[in-house]
Image (tube, one colour):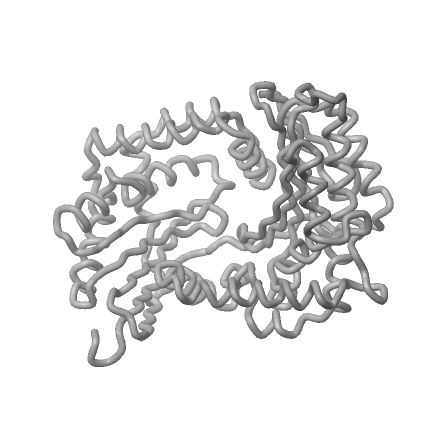
Length: 426
């Protein structure tokens, strides 16, 4: 894989990965914005509204027909949280031009569709169509409310809210029901132009394109946008754990408890030894060979599930588990005991080997799909640590048990959250 990166205009970056083994190529346009309470819901609503219709393709049906006519090109949107930023994406899967049986320039036709949807939306009285806005607001509210029904996800979200209260990272990338209900076509139109003017824009083209022609096409596409880019949004990393653990109990009418623990790690993607934290996390709780899985779940049967995940953008780690209410203390004690085991150096050769193999296997799959390649290089440019999968493999291979024990000494419990039954049920 050959990677190329350049700046097309102020804050608009072109990223190209040349890879000829795929039949379909990938184009992704990602807008990176600060995550704020005032704009989260508006931003989350933008691409769904844009995908309702454009000047040339004014309905979902006409967009779908155009996609089908371009050899089943697919256009999808997503929104997610990355550190203290909100990332909005439009992504296209486009058949390589060499497979066109009628001589069609598939890439250019797909770009015409992308251009029209992103920059020439259907309007009504100079702003977004009210019908489209109201319809997508209802869907967004449904998505927000659905998070409450998924108790496992809900507990993880609530832990984040409590752990990062007052911090941008504690906000949802979907916004709230209240902020969504308040959105009108005029204010959404204003936010749309704010996004185009101020967001950091990362364009990725992965596959077998005429990259010079495609980068020039994107440059022309955005040249009419008045940019007011002032720099990439920053993420504030954790500076340490609380002196006293924040403890939160929440009661609902449920039959299975959800225990979520948040730890300060002091380890971020910006550190030269971040790969050590990744190894530590796998040994601790990320996989079927981890200490949490083998002990808390399998050996002691204290939970239905129990696993850890680390977040290198903010410098913290979580443990999430589903337990019987009566097992709260036993499960908590065992989770903390297994972390202490790592701190004491009780890491077996098999644990070290299995964790290393798991990470090496994940790295080995980077080149298996255009989506994996996109995520790898996007993380690299955002972290300002752009390394190849081969270089990452070497780092993972170099980690020792002593490195992991040293890294574990910084980990401290910060927030304790337990979603339990109502009085009389727990």
